[in-house]
Amino acid sequence: MKSAPKVVIIGAGIIGTTLAYDFVKRGARVTVLDKNEVAKGATSGSFAWITNQTKFRNADSLGEVGAQHYFNLHRLSHLRWRYLQSEINDLPIRWSGCFQTAEPGTEEARELAAELDRRLRWGSPTYRVTAAEAREIEPGFEPGAETEIFYTP
Image 1 (tube, one colour):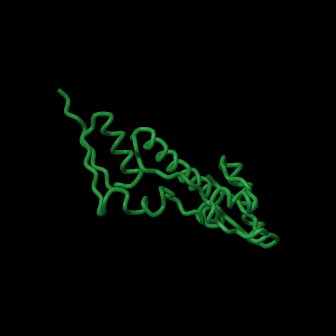
Image 2: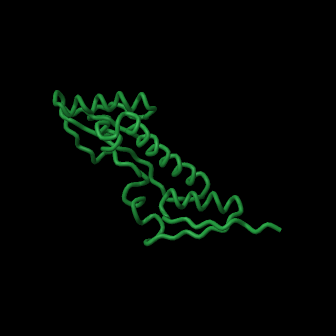
Image 3: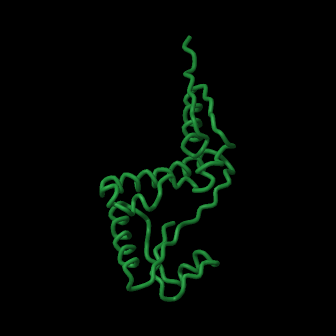
């Protein structure tokens, strides 16, 4: 008789937790080690945004291919949350999104528009919204009437 494989996972964030869940479903004996409580490290502060937006926005330091890899890893982390939510009843996840803004006519606005074009090429659901649409999405958000706004759900 074969014994179940033994797996040790370091880190109880979204990646470690879903890996543990997947291994257990396949019959492995899993131990998860973390210095904190489950999901109390980077996951609790970033909602699995395991990449830094400046990393995939700044292709100068990573190159275009490296920036796209960071972006894809970021998107995959969100899919893992969706997967875990579909597997575990009553998982307390509140889905929201991210606004990025810039004043029209500025260099920052041009950079943000170029970033939107790039993200759309990579498959991002990001889109431009008006100030009124932004307030409808997030009632407490006050961008100002003249602001360039992009939203990623």
